[in-house]
Length: 488
Image 1 (cartoon, one colour):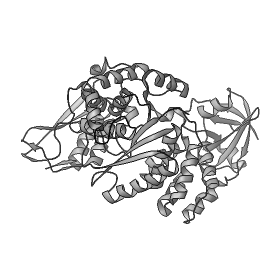
Image 2: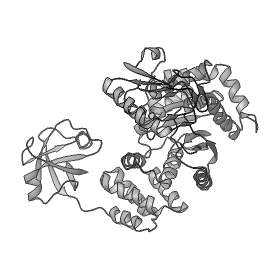
Image 3: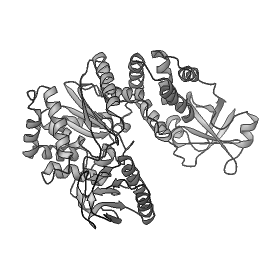
Image 4: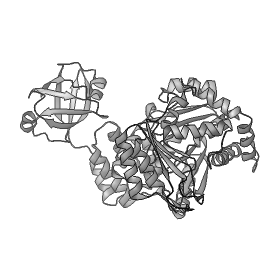
């Protein structure tokens, strides 16, 4: 079947094709079916949508992703055929039924996810299957390799180090840790995520002051200059199957343990990390309980042994944000204050020093029990701040104008009575910051004036909400009054 290409400047995030309703009915093609689009020997799978009105029966609207990959022009004629159901659907059904998947089956699923052969609903079934039936440690090893093999690798030489938190807790220790460890001569290519369960990922926060999306070639140049980087992993095509799975997990509000383990390990293997620190915050307001944290630690250790990585897990009870700021601008501002020695920003300095100290000990840069002391000396000397500025410059940025970045609107929340803060509900605070505009609006977010166990007088500021428009601020205030995330 031949159709004429029509462009609508449609950026869908994946290959999507829109067919005319009459053509689709004649060809027995339905919404969310897959079709192959071919031109000059280049063939690509796309997900189908159906419409009328803005296209003719002999036309096909293609998303920008298809246009770029196949190098199409307006009114190009392409060959279209219905794609057969992928073999990987059978493997997904097998997992949903409680079966165990082998390496080849998992590799096929990951390849089909990357190549857009599987729709979001089918990926959702795969995630549901993992949640329902869980995975053995052997399956997790195989899935790690399957995820790793779908993307590119940095292939760095030397003793590469890395750290990762399972997330959920606002506060950016990573830029501080990277600055300290690279000052000590360690190679730390930090590929970070954007916001997943918090209002700001490390990449979102760093992006306030510099560029975070680079090619692998550009990153190697940055590393040569500074021994470190703070970049967005999504721009590198490292473990792209994992990125697509995470997108669907967000929609489902599911986070299967097996996927978390394979995701983290695949990304560490992709940068050739030899020494890795994993932070696992636990508690009533965190992602996991103490028991679940201990189970994750055991599994991380088993995977690290298999992949020959020197790994340590830090388990820390965490019942509130570790810094003052929640949101990209506010969190990177906390980081700069700590690096400059202007403030501890509540627990941010201490947590960063603890993790940096562990990495210094794991790599032999510091003697056992002396890592935190060494990290503190580097931080207090101002050298870590100098290193941070060098990384920012290498990533085509500057902190000179950070004070000029401000939200248009703000509202202080004050205590209506005297009391002691007994509960800070992290999930509600995260939701509040997102309603205020995070992470898209960099200046949006929350600044905490008080923390857990603080005594607050009537009329004192508890927190300030920042937003870029009145509607979002109004909705954020409404959500705060409804949920009361800070309680006396």
